[in-house]
Amino acid sequence: MAQNSIFRLAAVLAVAGSPFLLAACDEAKTAPVAEVRPVKAEAVHYKPGNDVMAFAGIVAPRYETALGFRIAGKVTAREVDVGQQVKAGAVLARIDTADYELQRRNAQAQVSAADADVAKARADLGRYEQLRTSPAFTPAVFDQRRQVTDAAEARLNQARAQLRIYDNQMGYTVLKADADGIVTAVGADAGQVVAAGQWVVRIARDGEREIVANVPEHRLEELRKAPIIKVQLWANQGKMYDARVREISPMADNLTRTYAARFSLIDADPSVALGMTATVGVPVGDFAQVASLPMTALFQQGKEPALWVVDAKTGSLTLKPVKVAGYREDAVLVASGVSEGEMVVTAGVHKLDAAQKVRLFGAAR
Image (tube, rainbow, N blue to C red; front, side, top):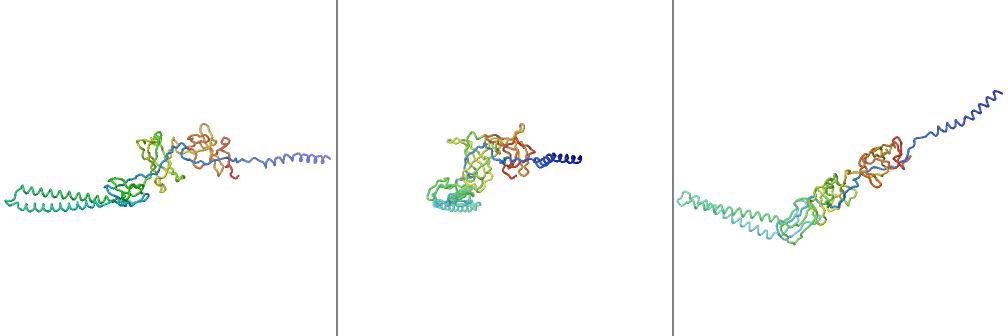
């Protein structure tokens, strides 16, 4: 009887203890796992500062020369057209040579006559010098004959110099390019009479390209202090060119009251064609490059602003202090502290911890 009571008591205790054993097993199965929290993030991209002066300009050559004949005459031929590429020494235009050929022949005749006079004077002087031991010789006559010879030689030199002038003028009847370049304008055509020095063909030399823009007077000082200048062509919005200020006009235009400035393109390529429209961007302030991020990405750590940077592979967080360049209505401009392309948390930054693991919102668990 006593033995049966002991068995019944053991059974009751076993049944009573089973819920606690089951609970212990459930707790072991449902042990808390570290939560990987999804976060919204945005990549950092640096661009020229939002405070940028912008001027419209056009592409121009560093050197552009207006070529013309050095003598007057009637144009008989124009050998080039606008837009044509020319090499140094290429013939651009010609003028009538008839009058200059006649002058040259006249000068040649004068040289021949002067040469004959010199020959006669030298012969007379030589014959008279042979009479130096004769009573018929007088020093006065000898000096006179020597002066005649000297005068004849001077006239010969003068005639030869005049002939060289007419030879040069014959060469001036052909207008040639003085450097490689492209024809940008034509000022005369065949049949037109031009004056000496009147431009006939304008050539833009190959080489350095510039942007010509008009700058308001209240922006001149900022332009001179600008650490970097960027140029963007309207024909190629996807590429930026570096530039520098080459010159600023010392006087304002009478009508627009702006100052003409020329910006040299440092890395111009063949796609930069003359006459293209361009935008010159000049950052103002202390920060030339800034990254625009949502205001919600900024985390205040004491007095220093910071950003949470996410490692997309490991899900780890790093708090990096940053330098703020400025603020906008819904954005913060970051000047430094984070690198180009890093992923920055943009929401819920005050609920994060450095030891916490996260994943980018929308990424697979």
